[in-house]
Length: 250
Ligand SMILES: O=C(CO)COP(=O)(O)O
Image (cartoon, rainbow, N blue to C red; front, side, top):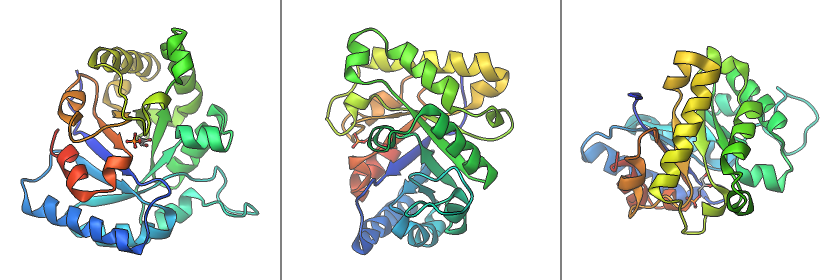
């Protein structure tokens, strides 16, 4: 049984221009005028807006996070951003190993682990994503695929440093489809068991977020499943009202 405070993170993906900060202001207003949220609230905007989100979010408790980082600290990597740069811009978290990165940029779990290590080295908390494809689930391989990703993507440094795991079934991302509550429960329990096997008591304190078509309509029941310690929200994090409803559901 886990008792850590829940964490709800919004992943804006490649969405967001300066005017999106109006939604952030609205979220800040909702968070500070309504009942204080039980959850930690993290917003991961595109890197261009990170410093603004960090500055603007601070007074309402919104924490800024990056969407990815390079494994190296600096160097000749055109277009990439290091964990230290994210921290410098005000981030406290960074998503690594999102399935869109694994697919679009052929990132392996070894790469993801190196990124998580770089994040920890820069004082960031990595949100390490795992999740099976639809064909893997249909073939009955969902748990073994996720177990393999966990083993290879989570660095040993998680023994001493905070990391977060996000279970995002690839087929549920942006599709409006979600696993059943039983399927979510089964997978989150399996992930918890792997974390406890590897990290002992510490493994019981690692948050496991659910992500994939999390919406105001399904947030309460999904976030109420045992061993679901929060959510990683894509589309529904772009609208302050929807994101706030999800935050308020825990
Ligand atoms: O990928 C996700 C969050 O990282 C989930 O995206 P959606 O909530 O849009 O399905």
